[in-house]
Image: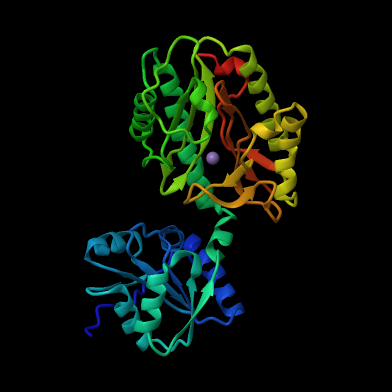
Length: 372
Ligand SMILES: [Mn+2]
Protein backbone atom coordinates (compact mmCIF):
# COMPACT_ATOMS: atom_id res chain seq x y z
CA UNK A 1 0.00 0.00 0.00
CA UNK A 2 1.22 3.49 -0.83
CA UNK A 3 2.89 5.35 1.98
CA UNK A 4 0.97 8.54 2.68
CA UNK A 5 2.80 9.69 5.76
CA UNK A 6 5.91 11.63 6.50
CA UNK A 7 7.20 11.91 10.01
CA UNK A 8 6.56 15.32 11.41
CA UNK A 9 9.63 17.10 12.68
CA UNK A 10 7.67 19.96 14.18
CA UNK A 11 8.09 20.64 17.86
CA UNK A 12 5.21 19.90 20.20
CA UNK A 13 3.81 22.73 22.32
CA UNK A 14 5.10 22.14 25.83
CA UNK A 15 1.71 21.61 27.49
CA UNK A 16 0.83 18.86 25.00
CA UNK A 17 4.30 17.35 25.20
CA UNK A 18 3.88 17.11 28.97
CA UNK A 19 0.58 15.26 28.61
CA UNK A 20 2.07 12.80 26.12
CA UNK A 21 5.11 12.29 28.37
CA UNK A 22 2.86 11.36 31.29
CA UNK A 23 1.03 8.87 29.10
CA UNK A 24 4.31 7.35 27.83
CA UNK A 25 5.50 6.90 31.38
CA UNK A 26 2.43 4.84 32.14
CA UNK A 27 2.82 2.89 28.90
CA UNK A 28 6.35 1.84 29.74
CA UNK A 29 5.35 1.09 33.32
CA UNK A 30 2.70 -1.30 32.04
CA UNK A 31 5.01 -2.87 29.47
CA UNK A 32 3.10 -1.64 26.42
CA UNK A 33 4.67 -0.41 23.17
CA UNK A 34 1.88 2.00 22.44
CA UNK A 35 -1.70 3.03 23.08
CA UNK A 36 -4.41 3.19 20.46
CA UNK A 37 -6.71 6.09 21.35
CA UNK A 38 -10.18 5.99 19.84
CA UNK A 39 -12.05 8.47 22.06
CA UNK A 40 -12.17 11.94 20.40
CA UNK A 41 -11.86 14.00 23.63
CA UNK A 42 -8.72 12.04 24.54
CA UNK A 43 -7.27 12.66 21.09
CA UNK A 44 -8.01 16.35 21.47
CA UNK A 45 -6.47 16.39 24.94
CA UNK A 46 -3.19 14.98 23.66
CA UNK A 47 -2.93 16.71 20.27
CA UNK A 48 -5.41 19.64 20.04
CA UNK A 49 -6.94 17.88 17.02
CA UNK A 50 -10.72 18.13 17.28
CA UNK A 51 -11.85 16.03 14.32
CA UNK A 52 -13.82 12.85 14.75
CA UNK A 53 -13.67 9.49 12.95
CA UNK A 54 -9.95 9.50 13.65
CA UNK A 55 -7.64 7.37 15.78
CA UNK A 56 -4.41 8.28 17.52
CA UNK A 57 -1.54 5.87 18.07
CA UNK A 58 1.01 6.97 20.64
CA UNK A 59 4.23 4.93 20.78
CA UNK A 60 7.39 5.53 22.77
CA UNK A 61 8.71 7.98 20.14
CA UNK A 62 5.92 8.86 17.77
CA UNK A 63 2.32 9.96 17.59
CA UNK A 64 0.26 9.10 14.51
CA UNK A 65 -3.22 10.38 13.75
CA UNK A 66 -5.11 8.11 11.38
CA UNK A 67 -7.67 10.21 9.59
CA UNK A 68 -9.07 10.93 6.14
CA UNK A 69 -9.51 13.69 3.61
CA UNK A 70 -12.31 15.44 5.53
CA UNK A 71 -9.97 16.24 8.41
CA UNK A 72 -6.58 16.49 6.69
CA UNK A 73 -6.40 20.25 6.55
CA UNK A 74 -7.81 20.71 10.06
CA UNK A 75 -5.22 18.27 11.41
CA UNK A 76 -2.40 20.14 9.69
CA UNK A 77 -3.65 23.40 11.20
CA UNK A 78 -4.22 22.22 14.77
CA UNK A 79 -1.48 19.63 15.12
CA UNK A 80 1.37 19.89 12.58
CA UNK A 81 3.62 18.10 15.09
CA UNK A 82 1.85 14.73 14.78
CA UNK A 83 2.39 12.35 11.89
CA UNK A 84 -0.71 12.22 9.73
CA UNK A 85 -1.76 8.88 8.28
CA UNK A 86 -4.34 9.61 5.59
CA UNK A 87 -6.48 6.54 5.13
CA UNK A 88 -8.51 5.84 2.04
CA UNK A 89 -10.02 2.54 3.10
CA UNK A 90 -10.95 1.01 6.44
CA UNK A 91 -9.40 2.36 9.62
CA UNK A 92 -8.22 -1.10 10.65
CA UNK A 93 -6.43 -1.59 7.30
CA UNK A 94 -4.62 1.71 7.72
CA UNK A 95 -3.63 0.64 11.23
CA UNK A 96 -2.41 -2.73 10.01
CA UNK A 97 -0.32 -0.99 7.39
CA UNK A 98 1.17 1.37 9.96
CA UNK A 99 1.83 -1.29 12.59
CA UNK A 100 3.55 -3.58 10.12
CA UNK A 101 6.21 -0.86 9.73
CA UNK A 102 6.68 -0.29 13.45
CA UNK A 103 8.49 -2.70 15.71
CA UNK A 104 5.72 -3.10 18.24
CA UNK A 105 4.41 -6.24 19.89
CA UNK A 106 1.93 -5.10 22.52
CA UNK A 107 -0.48 -2.23 21.97
CA UNK A 108 -3.04 -1.08 24.49
CA UNK A 109 -6.52 -0.11 23.37
CA UNK A 110 -9.28 1.80 25.14
CA UNK A 111 -11.66 -0.94 26.23
CA UNK A 112 -14.18 1.72 27.24
CA UNK A 113 -14.09 3.34 23.78
CA UNK A 114 -14.01 0.57 21.20
CA UNK A 115 -17.10 -1.29 20.08
CA UNK A 116 -17.23 -5.07 20.11
CA UNK A 117 -17.28 -5.05 16.30
CA UNK A 118 -14.30 -2.67 16.05
CA UNK A 119 -12.39 -4.85 18.47
CA UNK A 120 -13.12 -8.00 16.48
CA UNK A 121 -12.18 -6.31 13.20
CA UNK A 122 -8.97 -5.03 14.76
CA UNK A 123 -7.92 -8.48 15.94
CA UNK A 124 -8.73 -10.01 12.59
CA UNK A 125 -7.19 -7.28 10.43
CA UNK A 126 -3.99 -6.63 12.35
CA UNK A 127 -1.59 -9.53 12.62
CA UNK A 128 1.48 -9.99 14.76
CA UNK A 129 0.44 -7.48 17.41
CA UNK A 130 -1.32 -8.29 20.65
CA UNK A 131 -3.96 -5.83 21.80
CA UNK A 132 -4.32 -5.31 25.54
CA UNK A 133 -7.37 -3.67 27.10
CA UNK A 134 -6.80 -0.49 29.13
CA UNK A 135 -9.47 1.40 31.02
CA UNK A 136 -9.85 5.07 31.90
CA UNK A 137 -6.13 5.93 31.71
CA UNK A 138 -6.71 9.26 30.04
CA UNK A 139 -9.87 9.96 32.01
CA UNK A 140 -7.72 9.61 35.13
CA UNK A 141 -4.99 11.81 33.69
CA UNK A 142 -7.53 14.42 32.60
CA UNK A 143 -8.99 14.63 36.11
CA UNK A 144 -6.07 16.90 37.03
CA UNK A 145 -6.22 20.05 34.94
CA UNK A 146 -3.19 21.99 33.79
CA UNK A 147 -3.02 25.78 33.33
CA UNK A 148 -4.16 25.63 29.71
CA UNK A 149 -7.22 23.65 30.64
CA UNK A 150 -8.09 25.92 33.56
CA UNK A 151 -7.84 28.96 31.31
CA UNK A 152 -10.35 27.43 28.91
CA UNK A 153 -12.75 26.39 31.67
CA UNK A 154 -12.60 29.94 33.03
CA UNK A 155 -13.30 31.33 29.56
CA UNK A 156 -16.27 28.99 29.15
CA UNK A 157 -17.59 30.12 32.52
CA UNK A 158 -17.20 33.79 31.68
CA UNK A 159 -19.26 33.32 28.52
CA UNK A 160 -21.86 31.30 30.34
CA UNK A 161 -22.26 33.70 33.23
CA UNK A 162 -22.69 36.66 30.92
CA UNK A 163 -25.21 34.70 28.82
CA UNK A 164 -27.15 33.62 31.89
CA UNK A 165 -27.35 37.19 33.24
CA UNK A 166 -28.46 38.45 29.86
CA UNK A 167 -31.13 35.74 29.65
CA UNK A 168 -32.48 36.57 33.11
CA UNK A 169 -32.89 40.17 31.91
CA UNK A 170 -34.78 39.00 28.86
CA UNK A 171 -37.26 36.60 30.48
CA UNK A 172 -40.85 37.80 30.04
CA UNK A 173 -44.20 36.27 30.96
CA UNK A 174 -45.49 34.20 28.05
CA UNK A 175 -42.11 32.78 27.01
CA UNK A 176 -41.97 28.99 26.81
CA UNK A 177 -39.27 26.62 28.05
CA UNK A 178 -38.25 25.93 24.45
CA UNK A 179 -37.95 29.63 23.72
CA UNK A 180 -35.84 30.13 26.82
CA UNK A 181 -33.53 27.28 25.78
CA UNK A 182 -33.14 28.97 22.39
CA UNK A 183 -32.41 32.28 24.10
CA UNK A 184 -29.79 30.83 26.45
CA UNK A 185 -28.06 29.01 23.59
CA UNK A 186 -28.21 32.07 21.35
CA UNK A 187 -26.74 34.26 24.06
CA UNK A 188 -23.90 31.81 24.73
CA UNK A 189 -22.99 31.70 21.03
CA UNK A 190 -23.39 35.43 20.53
CA UNK A 191 -21.10 36.21 23.44
CA UNK A 192 -18.42 33.97 21.98
CA UNK A 193 -18.98 30.44 23.27
CA UNK A 194 -18.54 27.52 20.90
CA UNK A 195 -21.90 26.13 21.80
CA UNK A 196 -23.50 24.16 24.56
CA UNK A 197 -21.69 21.71 26.83
CA UNK A 198 -24.91 19.64 26.87
CA UNK A 199 -28.55 20.22 25.91
CA UNK A 200 -29.70 23.22 27.95
CA UNK A 201 -32.32 22.46 30.58
CA UNK A 202 -35.09 24.97 31.28
CA UNK A 203 -37.87 23.80 33.60
CA UNK A 204 -40.77 25.98 34.68
CA UNK A 205 -42.75 25.51 37.91
CA UNK A 206 -43.55 21.86 38.74
CA UNK A 207 -41.39 20.67 35.82
CA UNK A 208 -38.34 21.67 37.84
CA UNK A 209 -38.82 18.59 40.05
CA UNK A 210 -37.54 16.55 37.07
CA UNK A 211 -33.75 16.90 37.36
CA UNK A 212 -33.27 16.44 33.58
CA UNK A 213 -36.55 17.85 32.31
CA UNK A 214 -36.80 18.17 28.53
CA UNK A 215 -37.94 21.69 27.63
CA UNK A 216 -41.46 21.86 26.26
CA UNK A 217 -44.33 24.29 25.85
CA UNK A 218 -44.86 25.31 29.48
CA UNK A 219 -44.86 29.10 29.68
CA UNK A 220 -43.61 31.66 32.17
CA UNK A 221 -46.35 33.30 34.24
CA UNK A 222 -46.12 35.87 37.03
CA UNK A 223 -44.77 34.09 40.10
CA UNK A 224 -43.18 31.30 38.03
CA UNK A 225 -40.20 29.31 39.28
CA UNK A 226 -37.63 28.79 36.50
CA UNK A 227 -34.70 26.39 36.66
CA UNK A 228 -31.93 26.87 34.11
CA UNK A 229 -29.05 24.36 33.85
CA UNK A 230 -26.62 25.03 31.04
CA UNK A 231 -23.00 25.15 30.03
CA UNK A 232 -20.85 26.89 27.45
CA UNK A 233 -17.72 25.65 25.70
CA UNK A 234 -14.40 27.36 25.03
CA UNK A 235 -11.74 25.54 23.03
CA UNK A 236 -13.61 22.31 23.74
CA UNK A 237 -13.77 22.86 27.50
CA UNK A 238 -17.11 22.83 29.34
CA UNK A 239 -18.65 24.89 32.08
CA UNK A 240 -21.78 23.85 33.97
CA UNK A 241 -24.04 26.03 36.13
CA UNK A 242 -27.58 25.80 37.46
CA UNK A 243 -29.69 28.62 38.84
CA UNK A 244 -33.32 28.71 39.95
CA UNK A 245 -35.10 32.03 39.79
CA UNK A 246 -38.57 33.27 40.57
CA UNK A 247 -40.68 35.85 38.77
CA UNK A 248 -41.58 37.94 41.78
CA UNK A 249 -40.97 35.61 44.73
CA UNK A 250 -40.88 31.91 45.66
CA UNK A 251 -43.83 30.25 47.42
CA UNK A 252 -43.05 29.43 51.10
CA UNK A 253 -42.22 25.75 50.50
CA UNK A 254 -39.73 26.55 47.76
CA UNK A 255 -38.24 29.39 49.80
CA UNK A 256 -37.48 26.85 52.53
CA UNK A 257 -36.05 24.38 50.02
CA UNK A 258 -34.02 27.08 48.23
CA UNK A 259 -32.34 28.19 51.43
CA UNK A 260 -31.69 24.58 52.45
CA UNK A 261 -30.08 23.66 49.11
CA UNK A 262 -27.98 26.80 49.23
CA UNK A 263 -26.82 26.05 52.76
CA UNK A 264 -25.90 22.48 51.72
CA UNK A 265 -24.03 23.75 48.65
CA UNK A 266 -22.05 26.37 50.57
CA UNK A 267 -21.07 23.84 53.24
CA UNK A 268 -19.91 21.31 50.63
CA UNK A 269 -17.88 23.93 48.73
CA UNK A 270 -16.33 25.02 52.01
CA UNK A 271 -15.23 21.45 52.74
CA UNK A 272 -13.43 20.98 49.42
CA UNK A 273 -9.69 20.42 49.84
CA UNK A 274 -7.06 18.01 48.56
CA UNK A 275 -7.01 14.70 50.39
CA UNK A 276 -10.69 14.82 51.33
CA UNK A 277 -12.58 11.75 50.18
CA UNK A 278 -15.12 12.18 47.40
CA UNK A 279 -17.71 10.51 49.63
CA UNK A 280 -17.20 12.87 52.54
CA UNK A 281 -17.75 15.98 50.41
CA UNK A 282 -21.00 14.46 49.14
CA UNK A 283 -21.98 13.61 52.69
CA UNK A 284 -21.49 17.22 53.89
CA UNK A 285 -24.31 18.38 51.61
CA UNK A 286 -26.38 15.22 51.93
CA UNK A 287 -26.44 15.21 55.72
CA UNK A 288 -27.72 18.79 55.83
CA UNK A 289 -30.52 17.95 53.40
CA UNK A 290 -31.27 14.65 55.18
CA UNK A 291 -31.49 16.29 58.62
CA UNK A 292 -33.99 18.80 57.23
CA UNK A 293 -36.18 15.86 56.18
CA UNK A 294 -35.50 15.96 52.44
CA UNK A 295 -32.98 13.13 52.14
CA UNK A 296 -35.15 11.10 49.76
CA UNK A 297 -35.68 14.14 47.54
CA UNK A 298 -31.95 14.44 46.78
CA UNK A 299 -31.56 11.38 44.60
CA UNK A 300 -28.40 12.12 42.63
CA UNK A 301 -24.72 12.62 43.34
CA UNK A 302 -23.39 15.97 44.52
CA UNK A 303 -21.21 16.69 41.51
CA UNK A 304 -18.82 15.63 38.79
CA UNK A 305 -15.61 16.67 37.13
CA UNK A 306 -15.78 18.89 34.04
CA UNK A 307 -13.29 19.37 31.24
CA UNK A 308 -13.37 18.37 27.60
CA UNK A 309 -16.45 16.36 28.55
CA UNK A 310 -19.32 17.43 30.73
CA UNK A 311 -19.03 14.41 33.02
CA UNK A 312 -15.49 13.49 34.00
CA UNK A 313 -13.62 12.26 37.02
CA UNK A 314 -13.77 12.79 39.92
CA UNK A 315 -17.39 12.15 40.87
CA UNK A 316 -18.76 13.41 44.18
CA UNK A 317 -21.28 10.82 45.29
CA UNK A 318 -21.98 8.39 48.13
CA UNK A 319 -20.53 5.56 46.01
CA UNK A 320 -17.42 7.34 44.69
CA UNK A 321 -13.99 5.99 45.69
CA UNK A 322 -10.93 8.17 45.99
CA UNK A 323 -9.83 11.58 47.18
CA UNK A 324 -9.70 15.09 45.76
CA UNK A 325 -6.44 16.24 44.22
CA UNK A 326 -5.15 19.72 43.37
CA UNK A 327 -6.19 20.48 39.81
CA UNK A 328 -9.55 18.72 39.97
CA UNK A 329 -12.47 20.85 38.78
CA UNK A 330 -15.83 19.68 40.05
CA UNK A 331 -19.40 20.84 40.01
CA UNK A 332 -21.20 21.13 43.34
CA UNK A 333 -24.91 20.77 42.69
CA UNK A 334 -27.18 19.56 45.45
CA UNK A 335 -30.89 19.54 44.68
CA UNK A 336 -34.24 18.88 46.31
CA UNK A 337 -37.11 17.79 44.08
CA UNK A 338 -40.77 17.85 45.14
CA UNK A 339 -43.03 16.21 42.54
CA UNK A 340 -45.98 18.42 41.67
CA UNK A 341 -44.40 21.41 43.41
CA UNK A 342 -40.98 22.04 41.89
CA UNK A 343 -37.31 21.55 42.47
CA UNK A 344 -34.27 23.57 43.41
CA UNK A 345 -30.73 22.77 42.29
CA UNK A 346 -27.87 25.22 42.68
CA UNK A 347 -24.68 24.41 40.80
CA UNK A 348 -21.25 26.01 40.76
CA UNK A 349 -17.83 24.95 39.48
CA UNK A 350 -14.96 24.64 41.94
CA UNK A 351 -11.21 24.13 41.51
CA UNK A 352 -9.29 22.08 44.05
CA UNK A 353 -6.08 23.96 44.91
CA UNK A 354 -2.95 22.96 46.85
CA UNK A 355 -4.36 24.45 50.02
CA UNK A 356 -8.11 24.13 49.59
CA UNK A 357 -10.34 25.31 46.80
CA UNK A 358 -11.29 28.22 44.61
CA UNK A 359 -14.81 28.77 43.36
CA UNK A 360 -14.51 29.48 39.63
CA UNK A 361 -18.08 30.62 39.05
CA UNK A 362 -19.05 34.02 40.39
CA UNK A 363 -22.82 34.49 39.99
CA UNK A 364 -24.56 35.05 43.34
CA UNK A 365 -26.81 32.43 44.89
CA UNK A 366 -28.51 34.29 47.75
CA UNK A 367 -32.28 34.04 47.45
CA UNK A 368 -32.65 37.81 46.96
CA UNK A 369 -30.53 37.54 43.84
CA UNK A 370 -32.83 34.77 42.54
CA UNK A 371 -35.93 36.95 42.45
CA UNK A 372 -36.31 38.66 39.10
MN1 LIG B 1 -23.73 19.34 36.27
